[in-house]
Length: 376
Image (cartoon, rainbow, N blue to C red; front, top):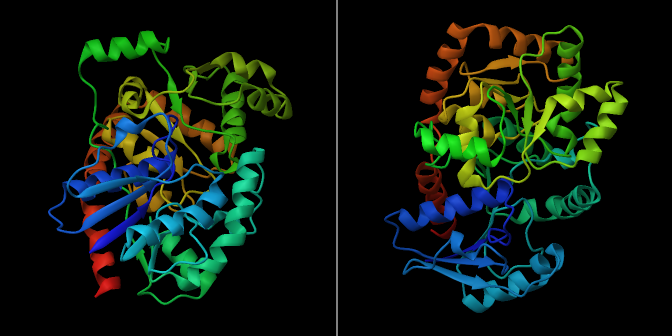
């Protein structure tokens, strides 16, 4: 069989979650003993060394264009030209008109829900509008829908009234490089490069409202005001004007003095930062999976996350679960975990074991099975 895989943005330098998922899946398919041919449709960009063509994997650079035009016009033409037997679209949306069967990875349907998360940057708002228009029209035509947790599977089935056979849970994996870094030189280099504090709380957030940056700032403010903030918060590439606005909204501009900004960090350098952190804070309002949870666990850092959506399913008992809508609960969890070395060690050990459950080779094997079922 000749399997087409949409991976439009995997060559961009600053990759995001869905880009990494597509890239890791393709690499796992490349490693597999499958005899199928895979044609990966991409848009040319800066980081073309992240994936190499091989006897099994052909890379087709499709004409550059804004995402909807690329997906609706150029991708189906390229797929037809390559005569693929099936097209797998990996990032929630897909062409409305295809000449071959469609497998869709639907990471989440947050943008279709009534909960008030429809904010963020202009880019995020545009993306949500496109998904709102596209997803309800393509889901009925997809032969199989892959999603990333049982929680999200149930949401999708209920929303679209789909039978159980059409929606399959395929858990994300964690990159093999997400392991506890023990090499002191590597740790020292990361600490120096990003000017990291000796002790810190690590938080991966962005301007998407579901990441709960405001709630995290409120929790830090609570701790600061009672002289219980144990260490600075380290954040990666985030808009500082956005943070300043949130700090003003919560009435504590001084909290910004307790946040350390690293700027953009390449994915391959993240394990060292996880390994240097004293704890990882991930109290999102809504996640379909939450890959950073597993990355942190794999790197041996104790985790605090949310008791909502998919996060209890992914973390099980390997993290402290809190109400993400309650900043006081987040603050208390940080204070208590920081002071309890025994609990930290327990969570580290449980997290290391839990992370082993999520791997890309298993994800690829399940995905291959889905391809074969569709084309049988």
